[in-house]
Image 1 (tube, rainbow, N blue to C red):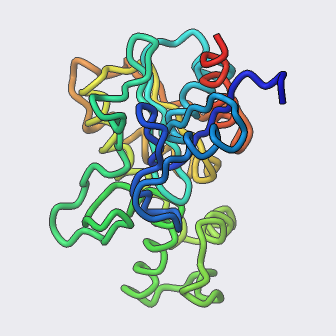
Image 2 (cartoon, rainbow, N blue to C red):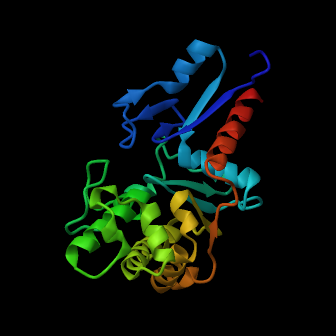
Length: 259
């Protein structure tokens, strides 16, 4: 234990300033959890906590496709939609530690889906892995077109099944990704107007859908982006495996504690 210089934790709704996890909608913990304090008291090792998407952004900047970049946005597409924003080589935390909750930007003001955060119409409710599954269920209910997904109980459909059906040429499954990609691309066009990033980097299970997601995303982004930003921002997929970006980023933050 004496050789451990610090502990870094990347977690949903992690607050870097306070070392807490606060009101995370996708975790069973409720309220405010003083996670860094709990680790420090139990282990006697300096501990830092940050949002898992922020940790992924640091990991990507240190070890991945964002090496050398000083301005980019990391979007994590998993159970939810997380984001880490790097400006001038620094993570953007805001005054309270929670800046950059792009997954909870409202993209549907009229009849928006209920999000885990309690609001309606958030990007996360549409462009996460759970959002993809929900879109598939809605499309199956809205029409009677044939689909491989009809062989699966609706409540059991996951984004993985939608992806596999799309690879087999299933028209409805491909429509699901087209809808998801277009909505994500429209949102990214808006995000670019805020920080003018060199790249938007996609990370997480949904990013592995490849051209099924990226092609409609790029089309919608190009169509909706402000003229002064056209052609300036690349869409990239993380080069790091699975959770490696967040783990490596959290370790980099812990290393800073040791220094």
